[in-house]
Length: 89
Image 1 (cartoon, rainbow, N blue to C red):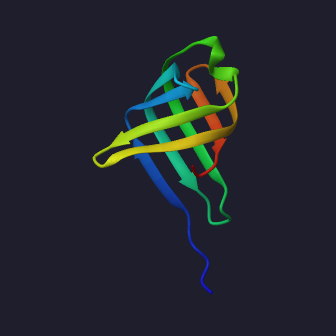
Image 2: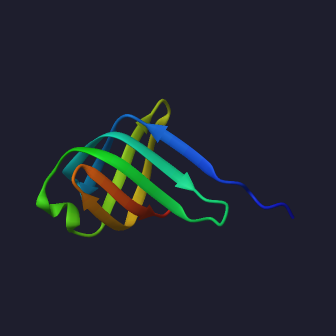
Image 3: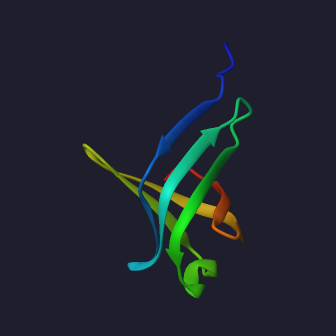
């Protein structure tokens, strides 16, 4: 059995939702799965409101054939940078 390496996906637009409420937008983001399987998101925020700290928060990215949706397990905001652990939807 071979071990998978790390995988990184990047984009320029994304949205944060609490239920159906839009609670934040991002202008750039990077999602990474490490070789050990840990999933992480780093994003630069455009705007967000205080409900971004509520749970559950889902990060949504539109793509050509639909959307990726990643529930956030934990999140930290420092200035304009959001760091979060994510799980597959």
